[in-house]
Length: 441
Image 1 (cartoon, rainbow, N blue to C red):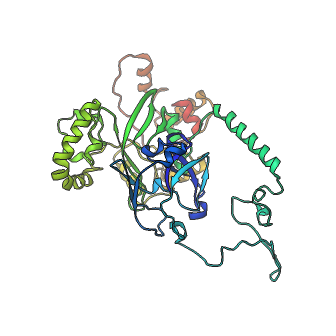
Image 2 (cartoon, rainbow, N blue to C red):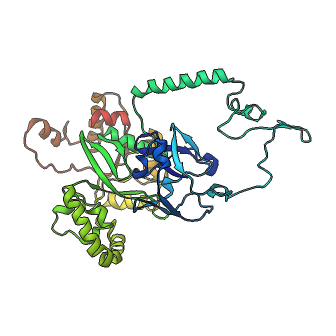
């Protein structure tokens, strides 16, 4: 079914596909903007006139290819707009959709269909086997197999009056919860943790539409146009988002710097109509039409995809990275050993407990057995943390003073100065727990 509109803002819905692929995390689907404006108006939905062209039914649950033509405009359809039979709607009051596959065996049933297994069994006891029927579906309890009415399946002996009363209370409770603190709902715990951590550091994710992403960066509202989302695959081992600052950027990878740079390359284009972001709606429309009709259909159409595939990722500016596998990757100990030989100071930040952090340090060759000493700083106050760090410094360099020169210049001088590293004989390691790290830094 093609999603047309929903009760949630930005026409989002949350579905549970545990019955299809076993995934317990909620998945997010979003309708097109042109259909989301229909809302729950039955007359407008009934008068909706469009044409859907798509692939025939198949057993691929994670892929969908098709187009929707409305008013002469064609919109691409993918798996993010399609709801499969067997999924459950969650945290969404209502949604409207257009049935795409009305055949007897749609996409979700082509993987497995057992004839004769679709018969309703009203008895809980199997006499010949002397066994009771047990319900294994996680959405129902063990009383669902007793042959009760549909209303009472999931609620044991709940009658209609109590059920209606429960619904009214549930509705009022949901209304009362609207003033509480909002929280992010993600498809996986890792995504939710990354967005929450970014919010704690001042980069707040506010809202998202099919075309834009709105953030608050250190108190400044910012909107980016979403150019492309490269999903995670086993080959790429990563997920990427290409965005551009609305009104001031041309290249999704460089943003405003691409406009100001003198060596701007035409190879940074992907789709001209979406990448030509100039000041003003008037210039935007006319430049898009000019380039689309005179260049895009003739010369650019052949080479722009090749250029984008060749240059994408090579001229980008890396803003940050996150691990995707909870294991030590190949070559990490050897790499750290070579960096240490070049007298490069290396820090490893981990969210594990202290014992696990020490084991990780030894496994990645950050901490070695031949080190003279490994200092462990675990204090509760700033004074205790400072005292332990000073003691560790005296052991590494007995001839040093109480405080390093860089600290004195910071507090007693308005001018900054370059201070050479103190000479230390031998190798030492330092482990600081989270509480001490917050107190000192």
